Image (cartoon, rainbow, N blue to C red; front, side, top):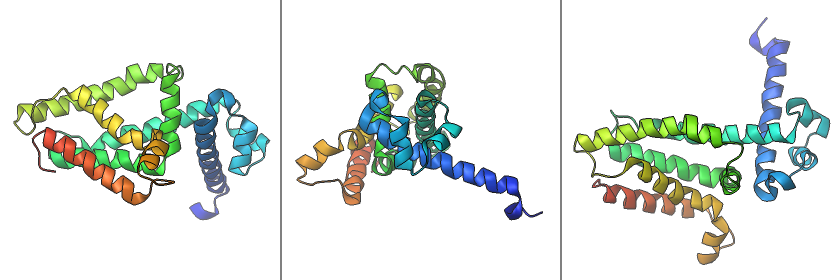
Amino acid sequence: MSAAKNPKNGKEAIRRENVATILQAAEAVFATKGFSGATTAEIAARAGLPKPNLHYYFRTKAALYRAVLDDILALWLDATASIMVEAEPADALRRYIDAKMTYSRKRPFASKVFANELLHGAPAVKGFLGGAMKRLVDDKAKVIEAWIAAGKLAPVDPHHLFFVLWAATQTYADFDCQIAAVLGKKKLGSGDFDRAGETVSALVLRGLGLKP
């Protein structure tokens, strides 16, 4: 039996599609209502699915919230893949900034969910932040230290460099309404994100002694 005709494959495809739809809807609702204000009924309605279907995949709101956070964190961790010792610093950092800015443009609700979680003390992700995320940033900090030792980069505190990059890119998602208002627009467009990414890259690369 071919994979296309295999009933199990068909059911798995439907499951993946439904889960992705639910996560996307939940991301938007949690971003606008917060964990306490969000309801699974509203999330199901936004996903276009009956509420029982949602609870078939996620038995509780807490489980769904955690899944949304896990999905967001996986995206952001993947964005660091370009930062490797063998890479050219300017290219690697530019690609990282581009990836982060792309997420702010395409997944603004994701950044807002995460920001709201941190503002409430990170109860759901505190273990992750001090565990897997800390280990990843420590590893990437060693890459930056290796670039500095090789004379490829001006001296900088690697951890604080990451904090600056996070702040500079995620602000276009977290505070998009403020930026749009100052720019005299109703909503930020792709051109605004392009210019923002170019500005952040130029400032960071020049500050590190690299050519933008």
